[in-house]
Amino acid sequence: MTTQEVADKLVSICRSGDWTKAQKELYAENAVSIEPEATPAFDKETKGLAAIIEKGKKFDSMVQTMHSIAMSAPIVAPNSFACILDMDVTMKEGGRMNMKELCVYQVKDGKIVQEQFYM
Image 1 (tube, rainbow, N blue to C red):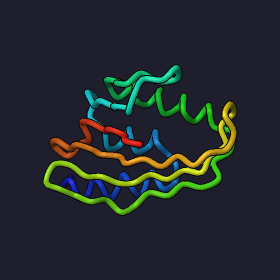
Image 2 (cartoon, rainbow, N blue to C red; image 1 turned 120 degrees about the vertical axis):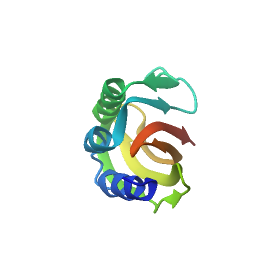
Image 3 (tube, one colour; image 1 turned 135 degrees about the horizontal axis):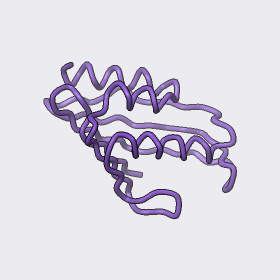
Image 4 (cartoon, one colour; image 1 turned 30 degrees about the vertical axis):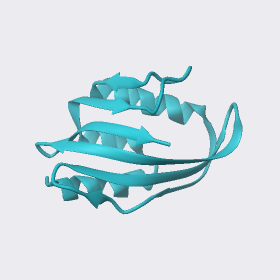
């Protein structure tokens, strides 16, 4: 897949909130996920597809209600792309909040090898 095809497919799947499907279909086995900073819930860096999938499941388990989810169209370069993810969620601890972040992805050989989030 081209970077554009990966980007379009990721956006389509993520708009439904199915992180696991996107990760299984589009991520490399050695992919890396980078958060803005370490938190009690998540390390700054998560390495490997299995660990990234578990991270997504952990996030889902922390959500009480997903009120809405939106993802912008991707801005695509030859080996990377970026989108804005906007979620209105009620967390089990912490209440309702709007989570808006810039998501930047690097692609190699038709697979996502790195994701990095900026708030």
